[in-house]
Image 1 (cartoon, rainbow, N blue to C red):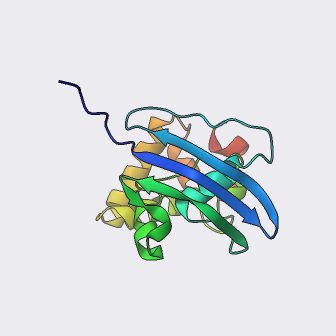
Image 2 (image 1 turned 45 degrees about the vertical axis):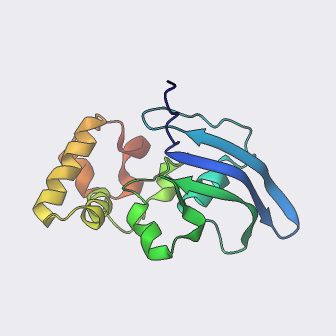
Image 3 (image 1 turned 90 degrees about the vertical axis):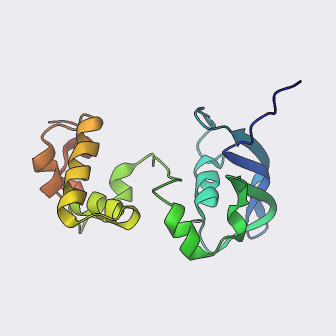
Length: 163
């Protein structure tokens, strides 16, 4: 008797990404199993962020995927309507941006942005979302949580992680 190999949580198969006639990601394949960590390393401009954006369905409109399949829990993300992708983003699939200060909305406080994400994915009140946000910031050891929640991203020292 042999144990069956579990299906990967995420499987990218033969993914290629193009902008016009320029292929920027060529035939990329990898699998990620639940509970495991995968590191995608490469030089600047090698397609790491574009691959993550493709997985989340957030590539710019001018990008084209001439080949590839992106399976999450066995479902091809490239076939999902935008509404279903929105339900997955931030809850089941996410990306840690290299430059968080350029990823946050400078017109909303840090607290507003985090609470909005919690409320989109969990059926909670505003107060519960605020508490969940506090817990998240505490978990990653952001100092002065209450102060950080009311600050705008541009006024947080070093991305709200220090001082």
